[in-house]
Image (cartoon, rainbow, N blue to C red; front, side):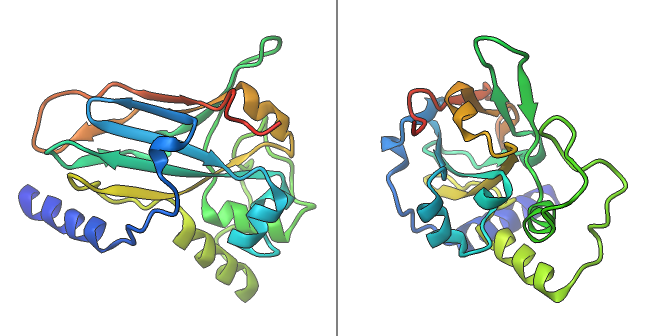
Amino acid sequence: MRLAAVAALLLVSAALPQAVPVDPVRLPAHDFHQGILVACDAYQNAQRAKKTFGKQNPLKAGILPIAVYIRNSTKWPVAITLHAVRLEIVPPKGPRQQLDPLTPDEVATTILHPKRPEFGARGRFPLPFPTSNGSKKRRKLREKLELLSFPDAVIAPGATVHGFFYFNMDGDYDALRFARFYVPDLKFLGSTKPIMFFEAPFSPAAVP
């Protein structure tokens, strides 16, 4: 049953669009070891974000979209725990912060309702918050963001999977120069060999 589940996930991974618009190896913010590449491309530029997301883009709502590419050059399928990913901000002066990725529903709600309850310390919405039911406009935006998001799929050998993660920066995009994309939980399927965590620093990759 486990092998059947893995095979099904690999079929999902193979069915995902694999056309990569950039070469992730050339992205300055990256980490590579054990045959796996994690590379990041932060969409700080307003015009660039508008081309991808349209007028209702996360950047205008204080949320930073980061395109993430994971390339698997090994002979084993690789699984990633998406909710364990963090954006770590470590300024030379001030407290260290770990930002959770936002869900497409949280991002859509923030874009359409800018006078929302405040986030807690650049994190998720405080609960309770009405995100389960919403307008048709918000559902359409959420679906669009979901299609652009990093997929929850097994990364097949030789494949590159990419998509966006969204982080609440409260519009302080200058802090990206002190940030790094942290991926703590990747694992090989079919092998007991552990995978070390990945850290892709944005400095000096961040745009001034």
